[in-house]
Image (tube, rainbow over all chains, first blue to last red; front, side, top):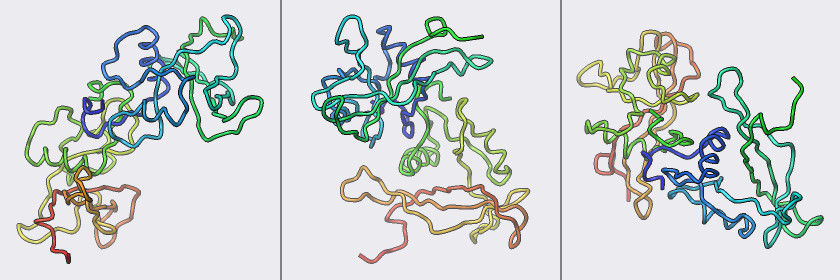
Length: 149
Length: 149
């Protein structure tokens, strides 16, 4: 992977790069030159097994990047607990707006970032772990909730 | 510059990459695909002017990388104070060995890293600043000072 990039470069993307470049391309099924975002099925993989799937080169990593489709339990309705075999991901805090910094005057909304924590066991029980996930989704001012102006 | 590297990659080289790849190439006058290490004359440039010369892309940076020849005051003798127009760089602490991590069993010596602090004014006076420089030089076990074994 990283052998295609000159020595000394590390993958430390900003939220804007993750959404505006990588997620957009993934959603549009466009080819990404350097495949640094792996496809996984997040509900069939435990957090500690992601490392092996999402390695970039030979570096020690503390963050792993992947693309996964949302698993809907029911065709309508939103699934709150994203469960794996041994536990579940639970949202925490408020979603954060991701904006296009290149635009003049603030920048338009390009996506949202949700933070989730992994719990072992089954909701509403379960034991909190140190595993944190940021889930990015595409979003624009047009499809976002209306705001006073 | 960084536009040649995929989005999300940042230049955060290790000591080993700086010495084993970039410094070796610079010393051998070999072409480096992505010119992230600028040539400067360190004794004709003030620390705060380095930023402009050594920018990579459009990112905010807190470290700048450059290559400069050592300025010898006298053909023999080692110059201790590396002076600019407004001040001088003064070595601090002990030099650190840079080793080739890819080698089995520890790795051979490939260079040394000296840490220097910038003082405004003239030695032995001068006022210490927050500017820190790491000066790398090539060195191998063969040309290093002998060690007990």
